[in-house]
Amino acid sequence: MLVDALVAFLLYCYDDTICTFINEKVICNIETMKTEIYNRLDANRGNVSLQARSLFDKIWSSFIAIADGENNLKIPPHIVWLNGAPGSGKGTNGRSIMKAMDIFSKPVVVSDLLNSDENRGLMDSGSLVDDEKVIKIVFEKLLDGNTCRGGAIIDGFPRTLVQAECVYLLMEKIKTLHAGKDTKVSVITLLVDEKTSIERQLHRGRMTILHNESIINNDSGVDRSAELQEVRKTDTDTHLARERYQIFLDQTKSAIGFMKDMFSVYEISTAGSFDETKDRIYKTLRQEKL
Image (tube, rainbow, N blue to C red):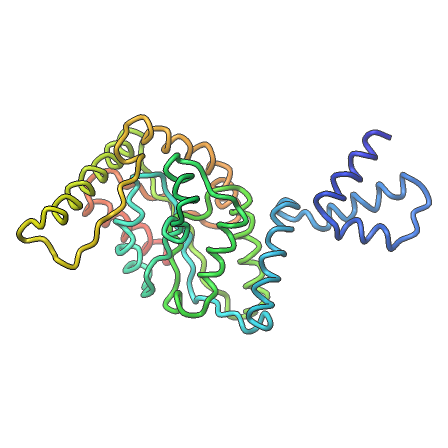
């Protein structure tokens, strides 16, 4: 009876549709109820958790309401989900990826979308922002009809298993809407070791500080239209830079594993110079005919 009560409680908390389904039927005994529960679980589980499915349905419904129907949503012709540890060069190598894949829209940088005081405090510590908030703001940008007309590179997403599961649900939904006109999907992970990651984070911090000082001091040869750049705490402290790298590995391992199971993931090393990495990007993406 304890198992039965636990199953019912979990379903009540995480899947109202299952409870509704059971309530609509005449349940003669506990065994019949358990059979109905597990049948429904098997039918709905698919490849994602109930938590992700519930979250995705909630976000998707809000988009449909705003767009006045699913068919009015604007789907980019090509979506690239780009991930990589701190210092792997997602921003630096973004232009090379765009060129290799014939994408013309500016990359959507998730950290920029989350640039509020509250979210910045979390990211400065290396932590991740709430899944629902991140998923909603990323999908909203992706489907707004203006930002990604020439294809979309989503820089820094997904970072958690729930986010990765929602990416899968989104792509399945898009397939349904665009029967016969599949949106092209690519998943790229840029690889960097811990030592190089830390060195690059600290180098970025030094360069940002020098840039800001040159503007403040009104140095000759400085672009007068240039703006001050934010200095991340993790870019000025070795311990925080190492911690940020480890948090990325710990918290994104399951997400990257799920993406590998669901999609073809192209892993590209960013060790060495910019030109060496650019050559690897062109060679990998063009050989794979993305």
